[in-house]
Length: 201
Figure 1: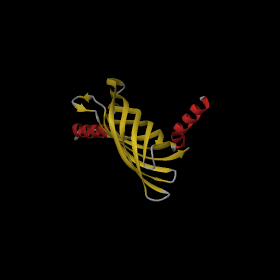
Figure 2 (figure 1 turned 180 degrees about the vertical axis):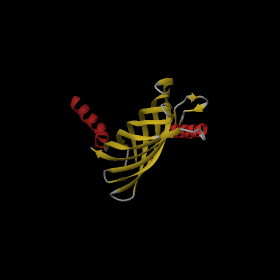
Figure 3 (figure 1 turned 30 degrees about the vertical axis):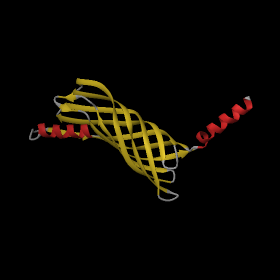
Figure 4 (figure 1 turned 90 degrees about the horizontal axis):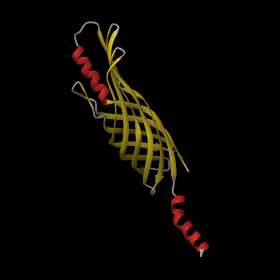
């Protein structure tokens, strides 16, 4: 009886064991719209002021590490961790400056659809949610005027392609951040373009 139970359990688990699983590592560039918008705001309020310069660094290196489980030949579920990097807007006049900076990272769960065009090339669509944590800081010179951390859950969607083990993707994380700074809405989209490699087992 015990032998029969073990065989039945093994037969029940065999589809899960046989299913394709993979680990994916990606690196690329993230663009934070809220910081880009704040740069436009700084440009507007300092326009025409002698000796004032603005600097926008709304892009930074990003990486994502994920685990995927193929439900069938077309659909998969992924869970991942991603760091969206640091973005900064700055205005300065001589030794004086104001600076706004964000740093974002978080975890995601996504559904993935793959359309295989041939044995080597596959189109990819991705839809899911990301739980993000964001630190932000607004400084005048070295004095912090307003700093806080924020967290929330946002929709994530993207498209991409895979060529053999290589992957290419562009994703948008919708409305990251939920605070206001002097009437300016910090929350906005973060776009992420990345290249990576997928290792199946």
